[in-house]
Structure formats: structure tokens, C-alpha cells
Image 1 (cartoon, rainbow, N blue to C red):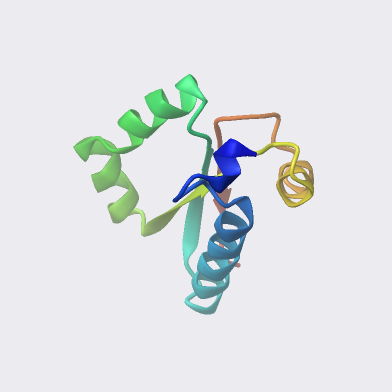
Image 2: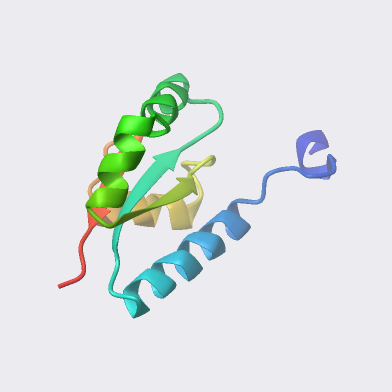
Length: 102
């Protein structure tokens, strides 16, 4: 309860709404997206974030016209997060998901 009352506490619903809005925009623009599913408590997520932020990876993504969307799946037990992870058969965090417009 104390965590939820803290100013600026994480809002999983907002993260899901942001993901949905970004995916809708990408679909309208017929963009290929790489979804980086992560959480602040996940040490492997932090390591992957550092790799994705390297100049070499950023250049490769730009050259391939791939937009990166970061989805903070902080609360894996949240029904919407569970549904997303199950739908795309993601085993856990971190996970990368490439969605290409056909």
C-alpha cells in the first residue's frame, strides 16, 4: 500500500495504454517494431537495455527501419500483462518481440 501511495509510483495500466497507443500508431504507419519487454527489478533487462543502446545496435535498427517500443511489464501477475505475454508466447523477462507489418 505504501508503494502505491508514493508520488510517481509505477502505473501498470498506463504502461499498457502507452504500449497500445504506440502499437496503433505503428500499425497506421505500417512500421516494423521491436518490443522490448522489461521490468525495473530484472537485472537481465538492465543488461539488455545497455546492449540495445549501443551505437552499433541503434544504427542497425535505424538502417532496418525498426522502431523500438519499450514495454515495462513490471507486474507480471497483472491480467493484461499475463494476457500479452501468453498471446505472444513470451516465457518471461526480458523478452524481445519483432512485429512486422505485412
